[in-house]
Every structure is written in C-alpha cells, then in structure tokens.
Length: 520
Image (cartoon, rainbow, N blue to C red; front, side):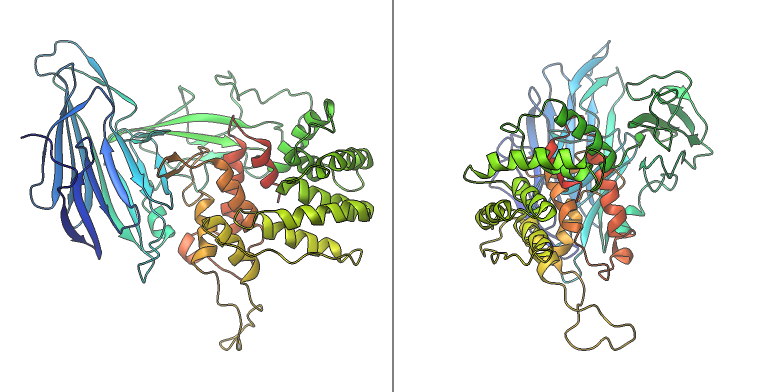
C-alpha cells in the first residue's frame, strides 16, 4: 500500500468531539478536529520514511522504514479512549544494535498543552475546551514508554533509540476527558511529592513514598528522604555546605538533583530541587547590574529589578534610586518607552515626588500598546501611586485583544465586582468568580502539574517561551482573593505562582525580563 493523501480523512465522533483521522503532507498519522488539542501529529524525523498508511475502522496506522532496515508502526485509534501506539523494531537480520531517531508527538493548538514526561511515567493535559459546556479537558497518560520532552515535542521513546537485535521498543499513551485540572493531576504517580521544587527556608527535605522502588540520587543509592546536600557533590549545583555567606536557611543558591525511581514498569527520571525565591535572585542580579552600570545602556527590566531588590530605607536605597532616576531621564527622552521603563518611572517619581519624571512616565504609559500585556498593570500601578501626590493618570487605551494574556489581564483587573457577602444571599451585582479569560492566565502559568523544567507548555510551534508564563504570573498577582479555584485546580493561585517562579528561576537562560515580571 502506498502512502495516503493528506486530503483523504475519516470523521469519528468521540466523547462529544468530531475528530478527523488522516495524514499530513508526509503521510504521518494526524488527528484534527474541534477538540482541545487541535491537531495531534505523531511523526519521525528523516531519514525515516513512511512506507504505507491504512485506516481500518476508527484508527489511522502508518508503517515507516529506516535506511538501516529498522521498522516503525504508529497508530492513533479512537474508541472508548484515544490511544497513541508506537512500535519500533530493529532490522530483521540485525546482529548488532542500531541507533535511530525517535518519533515526535506534536500538537496544533492555540492554547498550549501542559506536558509532564519522566521516562516510565508521563502525562499530557490540554487546556479547557471553551466550546464545551462543561469546559472539559483531555489528558493522555503514558501506559508504556520512555518519554522525554525537547524543543521538537514529546519524545515517547526518547530523542534517539538504541535497538537491540530481536527487541522491539513500544510506547502507549491513552487519553480520556477530565472535568478539571485536579482530576488530571490525580493520574500522576501516587508516590510523587506535591512539589518537586521547594523553598529551602520551609522544606529541607523532599519525601518520595516509594517503599518498593529502588532510588538513585545523582546516580548513587538513596533512601526516600531527599535533601539538598550530599557528601560528594556530583552536579554543578551540589556544593551546599561550608558557604562563606549562607542565608538563614543554609542555602544561598539553587540546588538541583536527578532522582531515578526504578520499578517494574521502568525507570522514572525526575529533577527535584531547592530554589531561591525571586527576591533572592533579584538581589544577586542587582549587584551585578550596579557593578558596571551605565545609565545609557541599562534596560527597563534591569531598572525594575534594581528597584524591587532594594527595600525602601535600605542602606544603599537612596543611591540606587538616584542611579535609576538618572537612567530614566535618558530612557524616557527616547520615543517608545517599554513597560518596565514606564513602571520604574512611576515608582521612582512617586517615591521621590518628582513631577517631571511622573509626566514623562504618563506619556510613556499612554503610548503602551493596548494589544500587548502590561498596559493595564501599568495603569493600576499609576493610579495607586498618583493618590500619594494628587497627580493625574490618563485613561487606558482600548483596542483589540487577540492575545489571551491581554484578555486575561483585562478580566482580572477590570471584571471583579464587589466582594460577595457571607451567607446564602450575597446580594445583587456581586462578583460571580473568574471567567474563561481570567482562567486562561492560570493555564499559561504552566503549573497545573508539578513540572520542574522551565518549558512544560507545548504550543503549535514548540515550547512556549517562558516569558509568557512570567506575564501570567504578573497578571495573577492581581487575582482577587475571593476568586476560589481550589476545587477545580487542587491548589490555590499563590501555590501556582510559586511553582511558576521556582521553575522559571532555575532556567539557565533566565532573562532580566522574566525575572522582573516574577517580582510583581
């Protein structure tokens, strides 16, 4: 059978969604339709080549060949569950091992999918379906495989596979609808800690409830209590004891360890860590910025870090504010001040009572694009600071909101009504909780699952830029306390934001803009 045409597809009704089973332009199996993941495509990179495709019943299956003679079968089947099955076999006459690139699983959706891959365990959770009356989501759980995540997508069997003679490698992921995030999180391994990244000031140890599993911590046998220090450091982050300038909790830097949980189903690989909070990172970064600060070159994000890392009344506080004010004169004289420059100017003007800086800040605030996140946050800050000096604030500009984070910002800052009164009859016109736009901010935090990696959200073109999650965190800093999400999410907004901050702060490519947003 020859590869099928991408235009030849079959429709299937599944759990209230209409799915189209077909193939892409290169004949790899693809399922599309108006479901939360949008497009679900499983393929393999060159030199794999599809040899044939078939659509028996409610499934699409392809077989592919590798120049080495290795063979692969990929099947998406729709029945009570939505299954993705993969089998990769070595060349039939092979006498030695063969290494081949692994298959890749991608999604084509405007709202990203949250992914947790850890070797023998894995989950992939979609955002809620805005067209579904119940707002259901779809969650895939790994039944068999050795999964990982990279810039290309989910790797159900890893980035590359070493095929031993006579041994076929398999993967199976099974999807079912769920009503909320808490129901999906309940499918995580029962022994998994609630948090994989913790604050060392609160949690000195992480407990893995795995009495029947073998545990390795950075390659060495370990018991179920994991702590940040080891007698013989094995990673770049392990040097914990004997520091010359320890903070109160005994750590002055981030500590990450790899944990392997070895069970009959395979080895689950986790990164666990003890992470400093955003203020600790900001203080360190502020010292670096001040060391060689050129008022003409410092960025708006760096100015915000300086201001937030230096408490009012600190020994060097006045010097820092003076340096920031000098830089602001330079930056505000240029057209098109960015968000961080504007909010830094608002803060400094109010703190030192400088009406000239305030006027320039308001000009910059008025020019911030309404279609980008941050405009309403800037207005909220300006209105709170203007009360100190009886200054004026321009009205925010209106405009289209195609960006889900802009819609979320507008909902969180503009929509909340009066605080509901206690009792069964809260009264007319009271706030009835977050709408779908506000809930999107929680999703873009990327913290629905306790994932330690900086990029757990997979979108149409690959991993979501961490700056998007940082914007979501800044927006959620304005989340009304009476908007409760616990029953659906299993945790509150504060904990979701903490997860996001710890995860993003461990990114080796952490940008000043990301750190600055985490300081809200």
